[in-house]
Length: 321
Ligand SMILES: [Zn+2]
Image 1 (tube, helix red, strand yellow):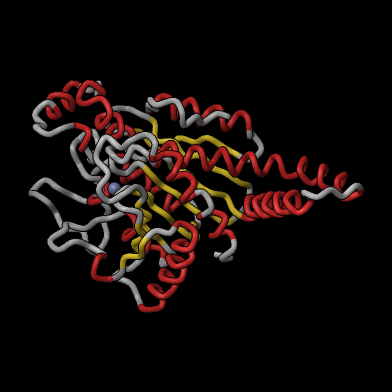
Image 2 (cartoon, rainbow, N blue to C red):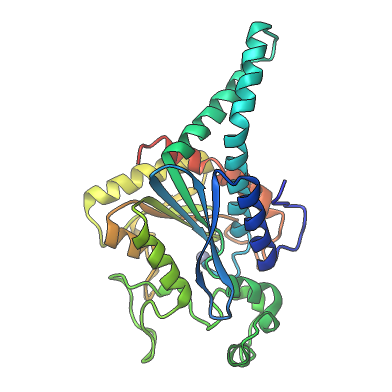
């Protein structure tokens, strides 16, 4: 096991070494790539899981304080890679059992079918996993301004009067999820412009580099799924709703419709809006963790969140996106 939930502290450095270890152990199915650099010079990591020519993108850690999803996506990557590798062994054992059937053969069969589906999923698709788009924000939310090395950024951060565990921005104090150049984006000041941030640019580059069939952005605010796009067609929204309902069945998360798409007065500029408008492909926001959870998020949320969302990928694989 590489990704260990029981180890309470999970730093940016742990994520980097975990990504390296996963790519090394599962070298024929995982590639570790760096898609950009944060403003405080941290790598923005992407794990490419699978060998298929269709791409699905999972992103997490856009908001600093949402510290549960990054390690959960790492664990999900490990889980699928492990199932992929194990499939051949499980099948071999099953064939042996078949010649000498026992009472638990059904369970073995279920195991094998699941493994076979994952094997085929990762032959058909490559899952682009960006577990932590905003590493500076993540570290600030855990360790305050001391987590930042650049003196100018640190000086600015020292003026922040609130509790750093509430920090949702990047190292420059910008909300990445309000920085994407989409129709809803509005400037929040004279010097504000869309795609100003390194993290935004890194994700936009990935969007344009791969022909992505579906994009899921994982956040943490109340176990829900946002699918509706006011800027898109009825057909597009019907497809979004169909996928959202399938994911609701898996996760038990609540669906949010058109009225909840954007809060009144919100400045817009979300990752999923940009993706929907530019590529006309499904893009949903999945919110994990209880609505009233306080920051810093209790690390016990890791396991429950993992159980809730780990089969999303499996379900998407069955949708022939
Ligand atoms: Zn968020």
